Length: 301
Image (cartoon, rainbow, N blue to C red):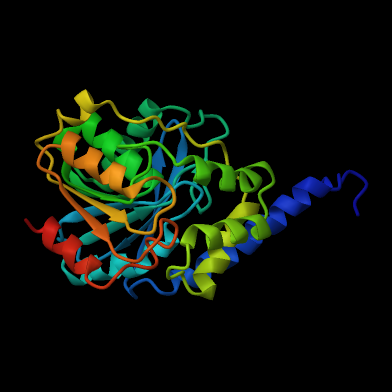
């Protein structure tokens, strides 16, 4: 070792190994994306550079896929393929500060608030050359999509919310209690146990995708934005954006019945459906038959 070299601290080495294991699993899942998939590194100042997967015809109507918290763009591959086959131009970013290949700017500022997320997404759309687009988000990504539609409705053509959390109701207490060990001491093992519980005996992603979801526990990430439920008065003002809300029947993240009822009451003109037999975290990798057809048909209306 050179005299001026400083050995990495054990914690640093562990984080590097965790990131390497995650990125290996990430790249393996990405092989399921359409063959024509490309990538873009989009400057999204002041937060950093956003890594985006792009597929589908160049002249297709745009759709931006937003992943859940602690997730990445990679599990969207089959949905992206269905959208591309239907003629859409798909853009799937990794969230800055979350697992994936987006990078934070050490000289910039972290994403900390709802307004920051709106600023980030506006910068991303600008960088992609999209004046307006459909937004299709899962979980926390659905919350981001809804927050953006409320802030910039003229830039959102359609809104698809896939088992959205903290949009219409809060998290179930049982879900938060089960998630606590994973939040306090995130490891692949604690994440594996939590995901198995949340599946509730329903279908789960295959071993390769499960490996990716578990490896996310070791990926260095920043604290996500604290999500708060939207006020009913806010939501009732969103009548101009066509909206499709899809709840997971077996989701343990929230009461599906209460959330669906609240969505029908507060989101004007929204189509609200329940996807049979699937849990929250199985999405978007596992989707009941007909889900992609339902979404693409909605986006063409």
